[in-house]
Amino acid sequence: MDKCSYCAEFAGDIDNSYYLKNIMPVIGVNRLRLESLSFYIFPSVGSLISGHLLIVPKRHYTALSMATIDEIVELEAIIHELQSIYKAVLGSNYIFYFEHGILDVDKSLMSCVDHAHLHIIPTAVDANDLNFKHIESLNILEIINIKAPTPDYIFFGDDKKSYLSFDQDKHAQYLRKAVHEQLKLQSHWNWRNDAQYANIKSWMYRLNTFILQHPKNELCNVISFCNN
Image (cartoon, rainbow, N blue to C red):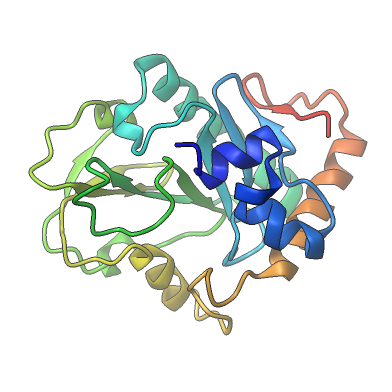
């Protein structure tokens, strides 16, 4: 936990934060502009499009299934309020979200950041084209304490429905790659190969403009603006 990149970023620890050490010198700004009581919401390194965000718990745990019921209720409200922000900032009526949850760090096949994080993207994605062998539908609240036969799970959905899969043949960035292909993007889906500075800057600029125009943000009750 001491070397968790997200925890280090929240604490302002440059040496152990990937973003603060490698990305912020190029972007030039702190990306922590939105938060709630239990979560930060900020642009993903390797943002596939402008508005590709991560919803990250302030507490350190490795999968959203380990969250408390209060945190998941709050997460559900965040997703709803982000839809309003997306519409106001980007003019988008769509969302798609996903998580690669790590239940057992030692046995995990995901090999990515071992701090829970939910990707949310302002776009429509056809779940029927995601090539999962086994999926089950569930609501967000049902993610808590799931009984998993594997050390990892994949959780994804939109504003209408959510799904859970325990397929173990999907690599850590499988859904990033799938979204990249569905949207026919020209960049690279792997954040390690392409940090997507332009998309991060675009979101930060548009969000900051929105904050200046709406300092008391009447769109949200759960999300607030960080004082950075």
